[in-house]
Length: 104
Image 1: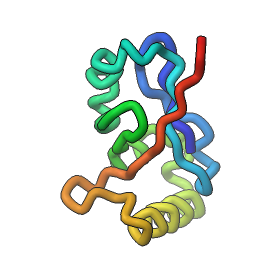
Image 2: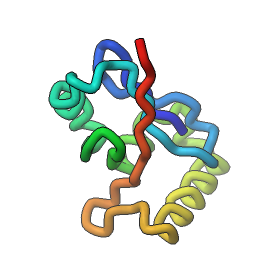
Image 3: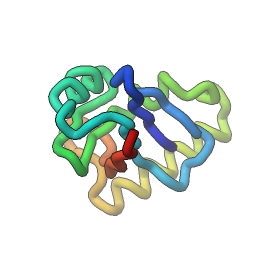
Image 4: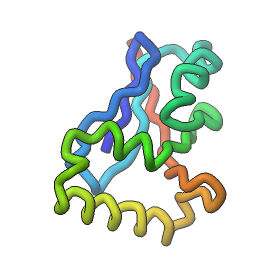
């Protein structure tokens, strides 16, 4: 799974069928971090320039395959794996994603 933040600063889910990777790719400038945080709020929280926390509910709502039982099972396994690594916030259930910054 890949969450993409482009020049519009809005988060967009891409590659929802890839349940073996999870990251946030930002194609904006580092100086825009506060604006990115504000735009990302419906999807989760950008902690700093390296880590974001993505709401499980947002991921499910954005996946076009969300009603597919096979996708649901794969997604559950991905979340279980993330939990086993400590990458799920126990209070919010948000999943940790590393951030990749792409230069414009």
